[in-house]
Image 1 (cartoon, rainbow, N blue to C red):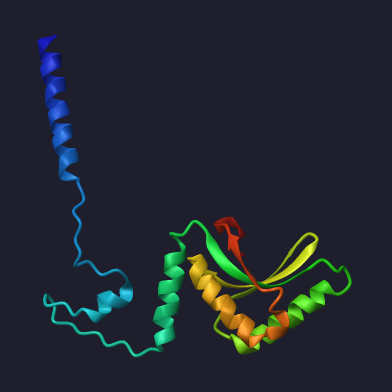
Image 2 (cartoon, rainbow, N blue to C red):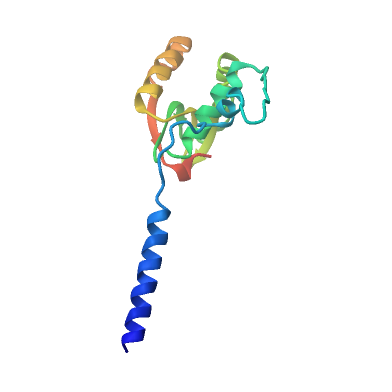
Amino acid sequence: MKKIQTGLLFLFFLFGFELSAQEATENTSEPTDIFEMFRNSSADNGATVTIFQDERIEALFRRRSGLAFTKTLYRVQVFSSNAQRDAKNEAYNIEKTIREQFPDENIYVSYIAPFWKVRMGDFRTREEAQNFRTEVARAFPQFRNQIYVVPVQPDQTK
């Protein structure tokens, strides 16, 4: 019985030592994304990478990669109607008009019975969405009364 107790004590000690060796240490010198990794040249291999690209690519990457950690997104709703005969065509016409003014922004046309909706953007905070709402209202004063910020859950992001 004493051998079993000694063996178990040894295993607990060994297991506990393994767990303490697994603790993560925070290293602030780690690159946060692939762009930063390439920008910092490595002294180990002497390699240097130069990236020639449009600044919007990195901005889009950073914006998209941050969405995965957000529980609630915010979008700017520009149109919502349940008029059975006209709502679908009107939604797609509005989407086309908005896309001409904001070609780089995500625009979503959706039908959630009985409403056709047009929403824009994927914002992590309400403030970002509110600032964009102001910009859209300035560009399209005819929609000013219909434009507002709406929260979107991750399962509704399509």
